[in-house]
Amino acid sequence: MKRFINRKPGPPVAIGLGLLPFVVVLLVYVAASAARLAENPDDRLLPSLMSMAASIERLATEPSRRTGELILWVDTAASLTRLGLGVLISMAMGLVVGVVTGLIPYIRRTFAPFVTVISMIPPLAVLPILFIAFGVGELAKVVLIIFGVAPFLMRDIQQRVEELPVEQLVKAQTLGGSTWQIMLRVVLPQVFPRLLDATRLALGSAWLFLIASEAIAATEGLGYRIFLVRRYLDMETILPYVAWITLLAFLLDIALRMVNRILFPWYGGRKG
Image (tube, rainbow, N blue to C red; front, side):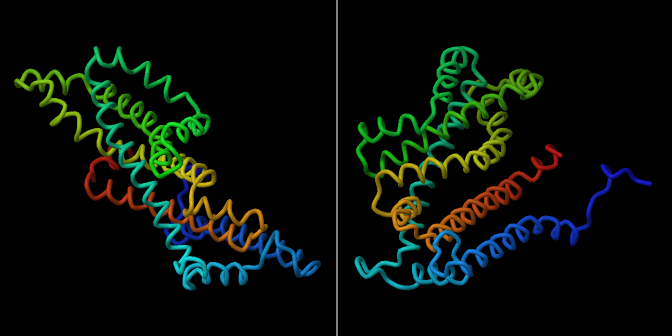
């Protein structure tokens, strides 16, 4: 008889088990919402699913009376633009700094402690400084994401470079490879899939920094909209926006997984 630790569910069972927590949470919410609305039809804390669906449909399909724009899509485009710029710049910085500090001892001894200290600073603590230094426009929001994500990627890539087998570097030098050639042809191909994985792990933090910056100073964006309507206790907008942000983050995670799987099929097998 197989031990429970060695039993694996088949595909249908695995899908059902994955959906089970979501179904339970949804049923609990529906029951709690129905109970509160039965007691007070004007209750705004737990709106019904139908009212939330109507609210999100209005925001997605009906132009705003003030601006004539479709609010949901304007907010989504603004937030994804800020997030994309911040994450892409962070990836570039993480790759360059991580590879150089991990491969070259003199640079590692010089900059690795500095990067470590920077990564320990809570990014939200420097948000007022960023607004003072860069203003309340788009730049400060993107810089906050970079400040929060780039040091994490730098340290992760540096560690991955340091874990590369020494034999590979010795053989490359034996074959006449220069430092630049070793960096480009030996190190980069092996750490790039790790960069995509680390970026996936950092997306949650990137969303947090984005929402925080939009809540303080913005005129559009998903975080801006949530904090704008909270003063009216508009849970019919807040909860769908939270669900929409979660869905976007999930889709970005899946996209990075697919890119990694397509471009570097050997990486998943090695991790397994």
